[in-house]
Amino acid sequence: MKNVLVLMPVEARHKEKIEAAGTGCNIVYSSPDQVTEEQVRSANVIFGNPKAAMIGASENLEWLQLESAGTDAYIIPGVLDRKTVLTNATGAYTKAVSEHAFALTLMLQKKLYLYRDEQKKACWSDHGTVGSLSDCTVAVVGLGDIGQAYARLVKAMGAYVIGVKRRATNPPECVDELVMTQDLDTVLPRADVIMSILPNTAATRYIYTPESFDKMKDTALFINCGRGNAVSSEVLYQALSEHKIAAAAMDVAEVEPLPADSPLWGLENLVITPHISGGFHLPETFERIVDIAAGNLAAFLAGRELRNVVDFATGYKK
Amino acid sequence: MKNVLVLMPVEARHKEKIEAAGTGCNIVYSSPDQVTEEQVRSANVIFGNPKAAMIGASENLEWLQLESAGTDAYIIPGVLDRKTVLTNATGAYTKAVSEHAFALTLMLQKKLYLYRDEQKKACWSDHGTVGSLSDCTVAVVGLGDIGQAYARLVKAMGAYVIGVKRRATNPPECVDELVMTQDLDTVLPRADVIMSILPNTAATRYIYTPESFDKMKDTALFINCGRGNAVSSEVLYQALSEHKIAAAAMDVAEVEPLPADSPLWGLENLVITPHISGGFHLPETFERIVDIAAGNLAAFLAGRELRNVVDFATGYKK
Image (cartoon, rainbow over all chains, first blue to last red; front, side, top):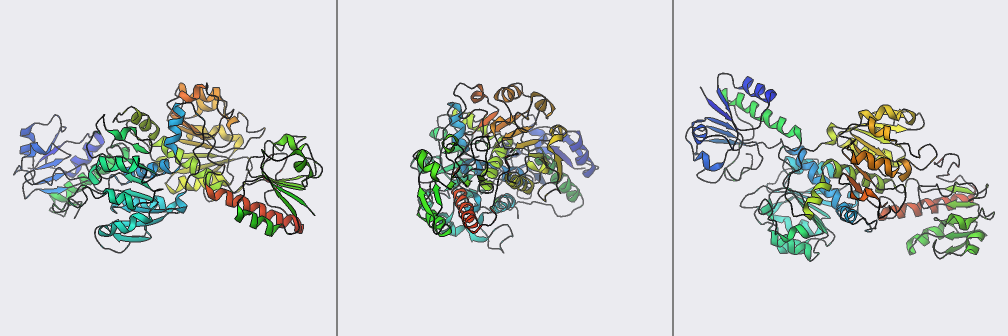
C-alpha cells in the first residue's frame, strides 16, 4: 500500500478526485508548515511543495508531484534520492501567468502606472503619446506553455512576435519568427516589448546584463514574469534610472520578497507585483494542478508514464 | 474658390494630402487658439474643432469636419447654420480608445492598481484572487466602432459578450448577444464587466443611476470611456465607496478636468485617466483623421456624399 502525502490546500471536491485516482492508497492530508518530518520521510508519493530540507533524499519517496512549475529547489543534488521521479505543474499556470504578463504589458504601454501616480496627487495631467501592440515587435523569451499563451494574446492585438527558445524546433503558430536563446542579442535591438518567462537554470541566471539593456531600444518595455535572477536588481535599477529603456514590470525579484530598502520600489518607470501572477490567484489554476496530480496518480499506480516529468539536468519538463 | 480653414495640428505630409484633395481651394492653416473670428466666419469649410462660440451660425460655413468623434458642442441649436453639414472623425479613434478601455479592464481585473499603490509603500503584499476574462460576461454599452473593437478584444480572451445598443440590428460577429439600450437593466445583474462607451446625448445623460449600481454584481468592474455625464460623480462615488461593485475606471468625468477637490481622486477602487484614451495619443489616430478629412474634401468638391455625416437629432453618425 502506497503512502500518499498531500500537502496542497485541497477542498472536498479535490479529495474526491485524488481518492478516486488513488484507490487502495493510504492518503494523508497536511500542509508544508504542519507536516512532520516523519510523515515526509515515510511517504512514497508527495503532492505539493514540501520544504526541500525535510525530504533529505528519502529513499521511500518514489515520486514527488510539485504544485509549482518552478523546480529549482528540488533539482539541487541531495534533495531527492536519485530514483525519485519529479513531476511539476507545468500547464496549470499558463492562463494565470500569461494574462498577468499581458496586463502588465498594456499597463506599461498605455502609461496607466503614471496616471495612477497622478491620481494620488489629484492631478488631471496628460502624459503624451502611447503605443499600440499592432505597431510592435514583441520578443517572448522562453517559449513554454506560458510564453506561447502570451504570444497568442499579443498576436491577437496585431503584434509581430519573435519567440526565443533554447532548442531549435519548427516555429509554433503563435510566433512569426523563432530565434535560439544563444542569439538573444540579435533580437533585443529589434524588440519594442521584451517579455521574459525563463525558469531558474544555470543557463538563464543573469542572462540580462548591462549590455543587454544597452542593446534594447530606448523606447522598449521589459517585463519579467519568469524568475527574478534572470536579471540582477542592480542591473535593472541602472537600466531604468538611466532610461536605457522606457519602462519595465517585474512580478519576480532577484531576492523575494523584494527588500523594503531596495531602490527598485521608488522607480517611477518600474511596475512591481509581488510574485502573484501564478500561485493560486486564478482559481482555475488549482483545479488544473489537482487534475494533473490525480491523473498522474492513476498512471503511477498502473505503471504508466507520468505527465510533466522533470529533467534534472535542465529543470524543465522532459 | 472655397476657403478651407484647417485648425488641426498638421505636419508637412498631412498638408500634402489635404492640398492634393483640395486643388483650387484657398487653404489656410491655424489652430483653435490662434484663429481669428474673421477667419472662422469667412471659411466655407473648416477642419478641426473651433470654439463653438466663434462659429456663430456663420452662413458661409458649408461644411465642418470635426477632428473628434464627439459632436455635442456643435449640435446645440444656434452653433451651426441649418445648412452647414457636420461630419465627425468616427473611426479614427477606434483603436486608441478600445485598447485603452481594454488595458483599464485588465488593470482592474488583475488588481494592478492596488499593487501600484503597495509599491509606493515599498510593500510586497498579496491581494488575493483575480479573475480571467475567459470566465466573464462582458457588457459593452454602446456598440459603435469603438465598442465593437473592444468587444473583439475581450472576446479574443474568451469573454461572453453582450452588446447593448439603441437600435435593433442583427448582432455583429463580435458579440454573443445583443440587447437594446432600453433593456440595459436586464444586462447589469449578469455582467462581470460593464464597459460604457456612450456619446453625450439626451438619452445617455445620467443613464447609470444609483439603482443601476444596485443591480450590478458586487464583484463587477465598471469602465467608462465614453462621456463623463453617463454617470454623475456623486452616484459613482457612492457606488464605489459603498462597494456596490468591486472597482471602476474612468477616462472621462462629469466635469473635466475633474476638480482637484473631488472625492473621486481618493478612492482606492477607482482608476482615473484624464480623458486621454482618444485625442492624438496614439499617433495613428491623427493619420486617420487627416485621411477622413482629405477624402471628404475630395468628395465635397466633386459633389459626392461625405463620410461620417452627423445626424443633429441624435449626435451620431447618420
